[in-house]
Image (cartoon, rainbow, N blue to C red; front, side, top):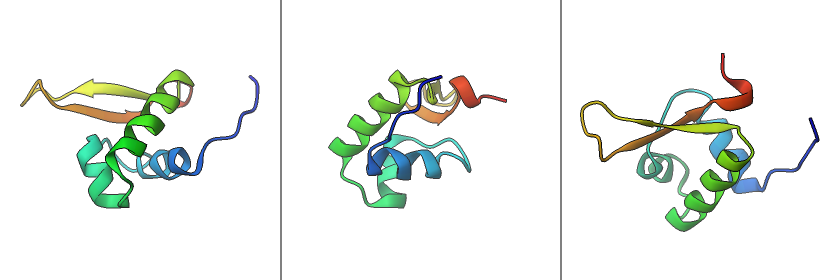
Length: 73
């Protein structure tokens, strides 16, 4: 696999997602990163296969992001 550098916002979000799955709104509340930057970083991490989206069974409108893809256990 080719090594690549992650933007700082993506690094921070990836670190936060190591503990649990969160919605973009929850990531904003934890980190203080602007929502637009969070969307960019999440899309970047998804394209690299480092995170995945999961639907909430309680509310199908909510997407949770979690580590997955290459690092999935």
